[in-house]
Image (cartoon, rainbow, N blue to C red; front, side):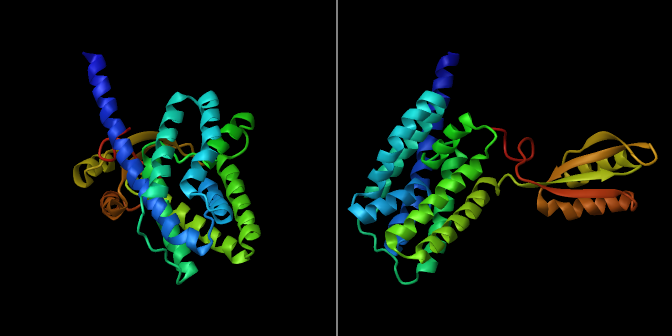
Amino acid sequence: METKIKTKIDGKKLCIDIIYDIIGSYCYGLAVNMFTAANHIAPGGVAGFATLINYLTGMKIGMISFLVNVPLVIMAFMFLGKKFTFRTFKTVAIFTFIMDYGYPNITPYVKNPLMAALFAGALIGVGLGIILMRGSSTGGTDIIGLLIKRKMPYVSIAKLILLVDCSVLVMSVIVYKNIESAMLGLVTMFVASTVMDKVIYSGDKGVMMFIISDKSEQIGKEVINTVGRGATLIQAKGAFNGDERQMVLSAVRPSETARLKEVVKAIDEKAFIMVTDATQIMGYGFKPVE
């Protein structure tokens, strides 16, 4: 009975993953088919490399990406595990089909290359963000980075991916014989990275507030009763005079910080408050732990 329930849940999860892959791939594919390829912009990664090969040979961009990803997926299967490989291959297959056949009557935008770079970056960021939210990837630089990381664990994956992307930008100057192609590609990559972070983390972002006061217990109770957020009391000791007191730790939404400050001020105007951004907060009152 338990096995059947597990299978049903996995099947539902797979369907949701595929829906996310389709939506994300459509956004990414629209960016390439409508904005980057026609304006001679290579947006980094395998898609950027495929755009350059497409310009030189006329082969479909999706198919080129697929052929480049096949050996990478095989290596991922050998070194990175079956689960990651299955998710990636599933996304790569969907991405390939949509890239080449999802826009039969689309008219490329070629009036303003800078606007094309900006809108392409936004669409790529949304597309990749949606795909990454489900723990998958479009392959390419992600796999390369993870494989190299196995041999050189001290090297940052982000730096490795940036190195590959920069290599594509350099190649775009050679292929298109135009330095503006690399400049526009850099704009696209920057916008895509910014938007992708917003898509992935915007719903999980919060604020961590640390409050040091002689009335910590009272503040903690008021945070729970008035603000409706949890509060944790942490034992703290002053380094200067050795005084022991409690510190209140509370995770809130950005919009709730002002209200929490009012609560603290009403109880203890001399309280010491530290506020810091939290990229992700999961658990009760926020996004469930996945």
